[in-house]
Amino acid sequence: MDPEIVVEYERDGETSHCLNWGSRAMPNLRIDYTEIPFPERGGTANRLLCASALYCYASTLAAAMTARGVKNLGLKGKATSETTKDEFQRAKINKIKIEVTVSLEDKYLPVLEKCKKIMEKGSFFSITCRMGLPGPTK
Image (cartoon, rainbow, N blue to C red):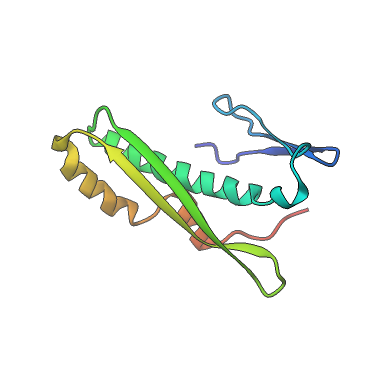
């Protein structure tokens, strides 16, 4: 893993945003609200955080299982967030629930049970969230 990852953001006008991931595996993400009514525009950052949590959990689980010899592994998942407001009325995520369905041969069930225990210790995303991040820098 690179010690430093750079993601770039660009806003073009009132309704268009672009995230440049700097990754060959991920095309840039363009968010365009041009035809979207203002009340329906919220939740993008929440969705991006849910996607990060889900991807991190699922890919960590898959890596743990693959490292233990599991073949033909299938995973599907869903992330659901619970959002509240803080004392300044800013939205914040209280909880992200991750649900993953694993498809594998029965002979690998003991490996799945072991990997579930490993996953209880957390993934890159959950460990980082628990530790907290410093505020924005200039």
